[in-house]
Length: 479
Image (cartoon, rainbow, N blue to C red; front, side, top):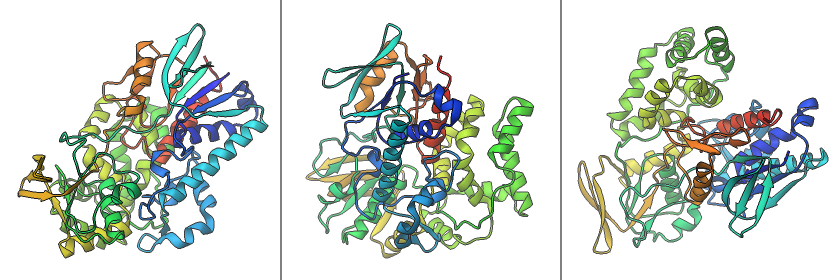
């Protein structure tokens, strides 16, 4: 078995680690042959999100939700050890380190997996070239790279990362416009301290931009431009309580005894969890629905005040959407998945809250008037060397516009479009109606955000780790 892994970021690390830690007969079954990783970026194993950047760009989840080893919530925390002592978010009580430091964890884990696989007789080599095509060739698969080289494989795993931020207002190429903010170290070097900055979006990427501007002492006005005006929720301090009902075991039991799992089933588990704590499910759902209509400043203030709130509702959601969500999503009927996709903004806000430190910085900037949120954006257009923004409350202008719009889930990265066209054209995969790729050949696998029909949290580290583990299991018994 000769395995080609396209992409050398977190998905590749998760897959290599899963292969390296197989034991006994499983390792023997998946053990013959070589493994080739294709990654043109110099940030091998880190991927785009975890390369070198400003120290203000932080990991946005506690250590238990950042382990690349599936099912082991202590793996990252054990590696972090004393390194986390200088990065404690006081309100959360957890170490939240710069993303570049988390990149070191991925790099360490990837290199360790490569060494272990080598010792097992499964050498791993890295090809520093972009893959342009993956096609059938007789009984095998050919991987073609931009430098006109061909590499043969028996199996291929596509882990090319997330999509490219969309340019919703056609501003690409305009002076003062940044289409993709990361790495922020380079983007913000081009932003004079006194200029007015408009940030398109109000999610976690937009929060990163605002917090990093503040860390650099930016003195100009900052405006978040958002169609919805909804800011992410805020992480609550974990209370050490482990869910008893919303667990992978209970979901598996439902699936085993009834043959299916629905959204109503998951809601039933959450209701039971809240009932145990003496809490009301309807009160929680009313709070979540109000996110669309609440004043963002007042809502943020309430959520900061509730970081230590003893109620467990949002805590359970924030934890289990990552630990149970990737598994439960695969079992839901498509109608339930579609219902959740239609509520993507609210669901993502709950699933991926902002950390208390960043929330406090936003609150300070909002209170001072330096930061504002402009909802119901209608148009952004260049006018006389600036950008004019028309929104639901009027108009504003800015000299700099930073695009912080997140790509839709399962979007195809720009650099992978030729690759995707090749696997579609040769029948190795098909497109899912909701986005992403579905393998049509048992020798093809997809890991990460490009997985067809995946959830909006597929690209979270637990989601990637879960998928990598499943692909490793599939390679145990190749067809």
